[in-house]
Image (tube, rainbow, N blue to C red; front, side, top):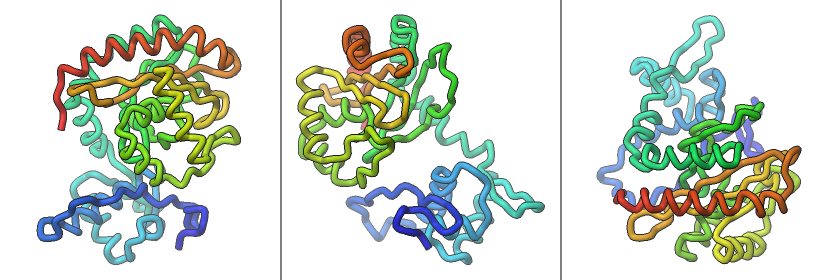
Length: 280
C-alpha cells in the first residue's frame, strides 16, 4: 500500500504515471501494459527488488506480478538471484534505450555543437527532450570537474523545476504548456524550487522574452542551469540545450552574463540542424 508521500511501506516508489489518450480498447493489450508497468517499476526503483516489492510498487496483485516477472526473466530483460530472491534489470534492458538514441537523428547531428558548448564554457553541456511533464537527458558532455554521476543519459526530472524544461514549455502552444503544468504535483525538489503555478507561468513569460531560462538550485542543490530552446521542423520546439554549473564557482549574475550568449548561440546552431529532420 502506498502512503501519501507516494512510497510504499517497504520504501518502494510507484512508477511514473502517463495518461493514456485516444486509446482504442479493441486494439489495446492489457498484458503488454502490465509488462511495461513492471519495467517502469524498476526504472522508478533502480535496485534489486523482491516479488513483493514489485507488486507493491506496481499495484499489481502478486499472481500477476509473478507471471510478468517470470516472462521478463525468460526473455532476458530481468535476472533473478536464487540467494536473495530479488529481481534486477539485465544488460539486455539497455537495448531499447540505446536503440532510441541511435534512431534519433537529432542526437547525432547536434553532438558537435554540444561539444562546442562544453569547450567554450568549460562546463557540462546537455541535450534534453520533453516527455510528458518531465525532461529526459538524451546527450551529455560533462566537464572535467564533475564529481557526481547523479545526472546521466536517461535521467528524468520534472520539467517545471529545470531550466531546459522551462525553455521547452515556454515555447510550446500556451494551451499545451498549461495542460502539462497541471500534471505534476509540484513537489519541491529543493528548498529553492518554485512550485507556485502562477509564478511558474510568469517565469515562462520571462523565458519567452529573454530567449533562455535559468534555474538556481531548483532541481539539485549546488546546481545552476541555463538553457535555450531548440526548434525543429515547422519551427516547433523539439528539445533544449543547457549548461550546468556549480554554485561553488558561479553566481546567477555571472551565468547570465557569460553563459547566456553561448547557450543561445549554440541553440540556434542546433535548431538549423534539427529543422532538417521531420519527426512524428
